[in-house]
Image 1 (cartoon, rainbow, N blue to C red):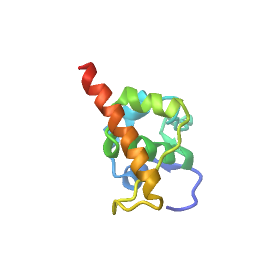
Image 2 (tube, helix red, strand yellow):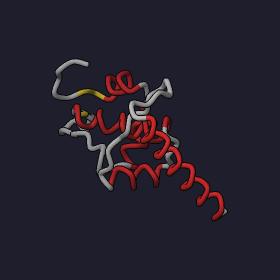
Image 3 (cartoon, rainbow, N blue to C red):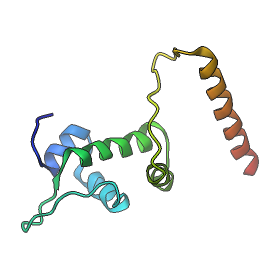
Image 4 (cartoon, rainbow, N blue to C red):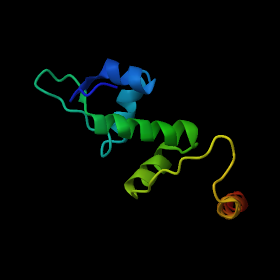
Amino acid sequence: MSDKKYYKIGEVCEITDLKQHVLRYWESEFKKFIKPHRPSTNQRLYRRCDIDNILKVKKLLRDEGYTIPGAKKFLSEGKDFEVRDPSGAADDPKKFVADLKEELVAIQKLLKKE
C-alpha cells in the first residue's frame, strides 16, 4: 500500500478485497470504527486507520466467525487480536492447551444454554 493520506472507495476495495456495497454497509454498522472523510464532494475518502479497522472487522466477521453485534462488542471493549498460528504449532504448548481448554469450556457453556 502506498503512503497516501486518503484512499478512494475503489482503492480500499482492492486493498481489502471487499465489494463497495459491503464496505458501505460495514461503514453504517461500525460507525465508531470506520469513519471516512467526506469533503464537499461527498466522496468517501478513507485514511490508513480506517483501512486498518476495516481489515479488523473483516477478520472478525469472516475469519473468526463473529456476528456483527459480537464484532461491535469486541471492538468497543478495545480487545486486541490474537494472531493464530495457521500451522497449529504454538510457541508455548502449555499455554496453547490451557487456552484451548478455556475456549472449549466456553463453547460447552454456550451449547448448554440452547
